[in-house]
Image (tube, rainbow, N blue to C red; front, top):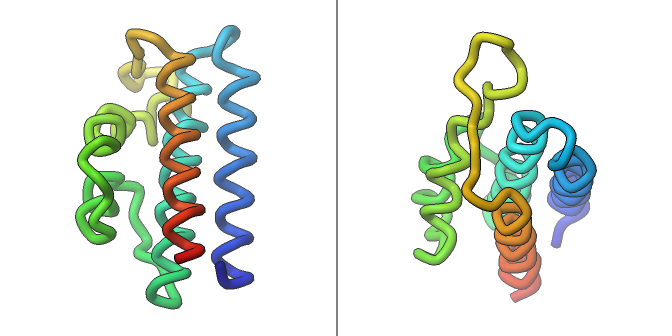
Length: 119
């Protein structure tokens, strides 16, 4: 992985770690950080593959541009609204059936990105 891409990927991992700390105390904040982890991870992959990244918070748009496997697409669709969930008190909360499973799936996505970046 290129240096700049690795920097983005490390931020993605930090966001996932923050989500894991917050999940029991404030689920909207955990959802926001899970979204950020996925977004930064996908943008790291774009940087690795293309030299730059698209400036968007839309996870669906990112997964289409990167040909992300089907197994992660519903996760990314569910996370998509979380980009604003914790930033504004009047935004609709994003709730997950099982928040810890969601965070594990984001971790799996980051692992796929790491492997894809090392091909």
